[in-house]
Length: 154
Ligand code: SME
Image (cartoon, rainbow, N blue to C red; front, side, top):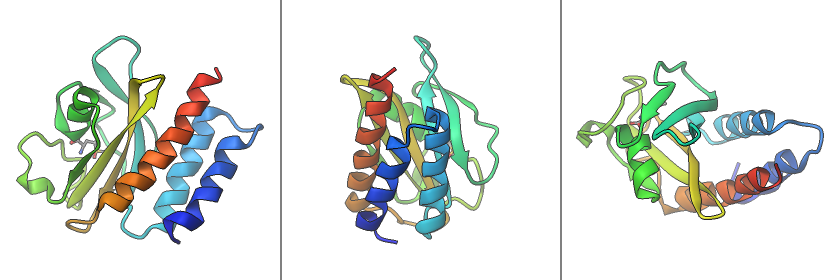
């Protein structure tokens, strides 16, 4: 399914009044994992209150032991500090990388902003090398912008 075909499905999930926020995020993980063949692991990490650490939220894919990631550690921890999307074409070329599965070859992490604050991120892993482009970045930024609205309402 193309990004453009997925966008209305994402909006349907996010605007459904009878599901909780985490259920919506979980459904988005499933939607992306099922409909984009190179999105092999899809999950969310969120800042743990005022602490400089990320905590794993809803995800789909292989179970990971990295449920808490300090700011600065791994790709996710770097994005928590840089506030910039990070595309990693080849994870073996990264020194500051936390491996969740040897099958993963490339990764993209895109921050979620609420009122200008970086509150968390979406993390997608692929078993293909060099899987992600600027189109993925733009698509995930679109999703995160819509997700950010959920955090304004509560
Ligand atoms: N690879 C990430 C850790 C999270 S797992 O991909 C699920 C990182 O380096 O931060």
